[in-house]
Image (cartoon, rainbow, N blue to C red; front, side, top):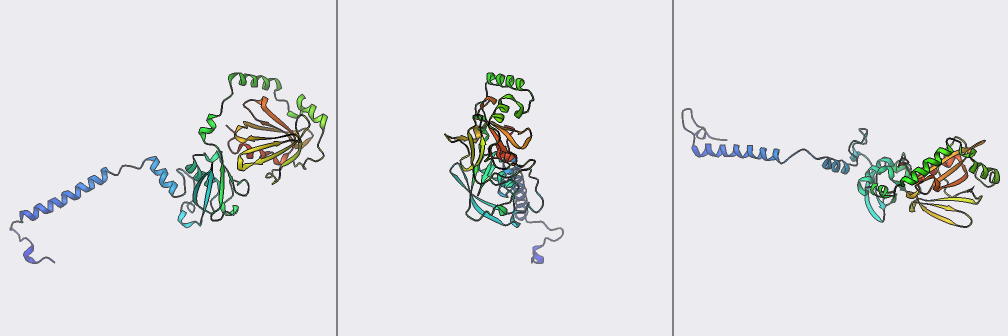
Length: 302
């Protein structure tokens, strides 16, 4: 505590050196504040994204209050494999595959909508890591293409487009099973005896074994094998097996067969035009959507 002798009395003078020292301290404080203000600009969008990514979320994510507190969620440590690169990931067990895809997008550059995650089969978007039974040290494989890869695929030429438009105008809106080329095949070969039972207005996941019992335009039995880990569709017949990269498949179309709506005619477009469609007959209706999703993923608009 300062003594009475240290307190300036009324009418007495203040030590010039003490006054100068106090003014100097005040100036330093004001100067530091100015420097701090000048050196702390608003965060850039990249910095915000980096901060949010470290918190396990993305910019603009619509998450509830509970999921916005990653520290309160039980996490699991596992590895993500993409094109022989390994990424160590720690992620909440109760978050969905959809949220994991958003996180993987930041790691690999593969848009979430172009990703397929493989763990004991194809992981569905709505499932949580807990439901998938992801354990510590597990390996999740990511199959997909960056936007650069997608855009580098050669586009059809104007001549190809004109030919496609001409063919489409010729066929018009006639159902596939009523078109001459398909009706001829259906009438000639009929329904296969060994085709799996079809279910109308029903949707199922792909079976764990190749899908067989169907035939192509030549009447040859067709077997579809989905090699998700290699991002390939294997088209097998008695004579040969063609291994087709899924990113080269431009479209998959299908329609129910008239009077047999539990089965479809399916066209797998292997090139830029409709002329490159590989036709498969008597595809069980319950597997049609699963086939399209396995081949095209969630980006059928490309």
